[in-house]
Length: 496
Image 1: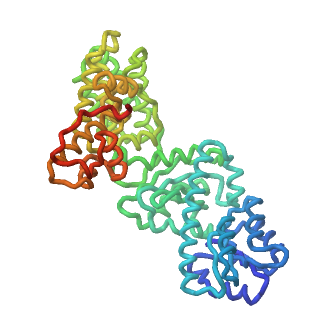
Image 2: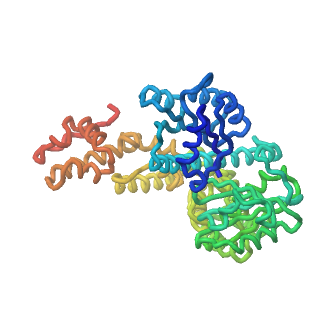
Image 3: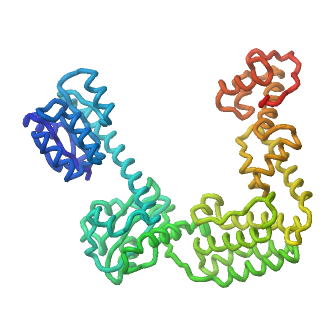
């Protein structure tokens, strides 16, 4: 429940505020109320409520003063300012100082309900942002776990053991109990942090059978079909919580390997099979046996399933291959530098383990065909890749294009692509794409079959004003005035 403090120097007005809002039904609880503004400031600082509802005109300290003084003390409560005076200056001042809303007495019950609905949404979004920041600070080590647990008034009474679960995809029905349920409602002590609508982290404290208790408790949940739950290992040291959060997050990303949603326990055991695969690949690179390399890499997804390997191993696999490739391209500044990635970067960059393997094959193909191992010339391969990139641009100019993404797709360094674009086409990348779009736009307008607005969207632009401005800069006239019978002027560089 969200905590609320009511402040008004008139007792009858306080009762009116209490009654006009359906606090409990909307998920709010009145933690305190007072007619003394000075006492209100003390209550706000000690209770740190989610919401403060205060009259604007009070002796000694006004509602606006109460808001500004609270902010100076680091209080982030949402303030609702109430006034009996319909003066715009009051409302303007309240909003300027950061009040959530400004209401006139008497408050209409319908408006009161709408206000609480908006307020609840704001508080929910605010809590999610705070939770995300908290998890980042814990994982980075910026926030000591013991200190954070103390701030959250989380006394570990369940036992000496800790485990973390990360829930992704869809939050199960039973999860709603966690933030508000008493400790006795579960066989362990949970502390839930919802990060967004489809992800949450639960820190659990309990006895020596903690994992068993968690599994039994979760078995009662009505889990949606796309719900994924990652479990960390168990520890008896609260200071290990940052590691446990990472482990549970990595386990919850198991869909990268196997799309079936399930509960996955984190495993970090060494996989000799992966080490052997990388070693064999390195030998085949020296022999330039790309077919042999493909055969090995194509077997990786099945290996992960049969050996029960997880996201930890997928991360190790990528970084081992990255090391091999970087080592062999050490003197080649023109080919794309392969980066070491953590599991989150890998999941966001590739759709699946199979997609990651295909990308690795592409990199190794370039490596095998470029004679990198022997240090021979590589300009032919690079130019061949650039020609393929250029063909892709020519065919897809009407779609969103990014030089960095194209360079990555064709295993080329972005700086190299940028230089080659100017050398081969005479244009920078952005000017070249603009040239293709403008030439196509002129042809479409000349056909007489399309309006300028339609041509705008057909050539990859979402903003007609920007399209028109670019067209006029390119051809000297606005697209709406470009007659079908006009000859196409000789295009020029947009940078001139």
